[in-house]
Length: 472
Image (cartoon, rainbow, N blue to C red; front, top):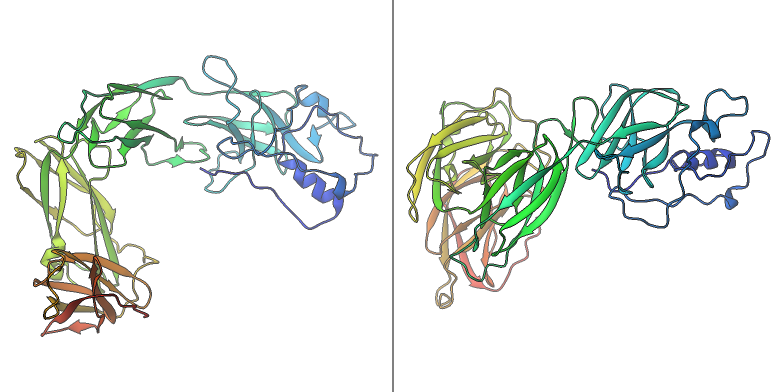
């Protein structure tokens, strides 16, 4: 959702500049000058104060016209225009009939259309505003007030009477907990959460068939027993948390709803991935990505990605890459996934044990079409395949870190990292002509450049105190 409202600024004659600035502004109660009155110089025209998309004032907004369309009709009494632009006076009320907040915004879309860019819009004041459009015609007039939105379809603009829009009925979303929420960590300080819309047709400026992409923020702490969140009745949503310590059950809701706060991740999971067709491939370089949802949770619980070269079979992806870690809140449930280059799927699980590793095997399938090229992906020049030997320099292992973060980066800035123990050998595949470097806690390896293709002897990285600067 946009945070500010833009203006049309055209380097033209003074009268044109004045008209354009006035176009996106709530009008004052002042009666417009007759057409015979010459426009004032540009220097004497001060643009109207603005409010942000969220309603934060930059200065006191102008008073909105109260006289309806008739008070601003043109001299001959025909179509209502204001500085040459058609307009509609809009009133927005809540479901109980009270005025919408001054943070609310009204906007205009050509009838039957949708948009991903900011349309003509204006903030309300005391529930009213005058909205201008570029030309006369039919429009869908929308109103947004935080999580609440409504749309009036096929409105003729200009319009001689005010248009009233009523926002949806509110409903309660209750988050209920039994303190302490995280009993195994008495010092837990709490976490921020965000309740947000969930759906396939979300938009910041919803048109026909779309819903508002709303979100409401809050915080839970050890002693939280109940939190009330107001959202539109019938709205579908989910709750996301800023840490993996807590979650809600169920993870998705339709308001009104009661969600129970739970200690998250009580059942550790290892997800072992395999492909339904080991010989599957794409004809060009593809960056595969998948998001895994474990059980009835509201947040993404595991992310996976892999680069697949042109015509590279999925069976050749390294074994270490085909294992990821997650957690479940309940012993029984379903894992679902979707992603880029990966067909959506699901698989049930049951009988998970507490405080021990639970292994679940998932079978993935490539999507029917190769994913669109990733702007951040490396150029298609082949992959290296090597064994990384991570060693410490002789006599320098007294304070050696137990786990070191290993990076490889190519000349385009594409970068991937993983972790490795000193003395351990692990296989690695990545874009050819990459730099390999490992670092942790002041220990760094001299960078090693790895060309595309197999490397039978592997690649040795030697850890020493100090640092290296890699300029690729």
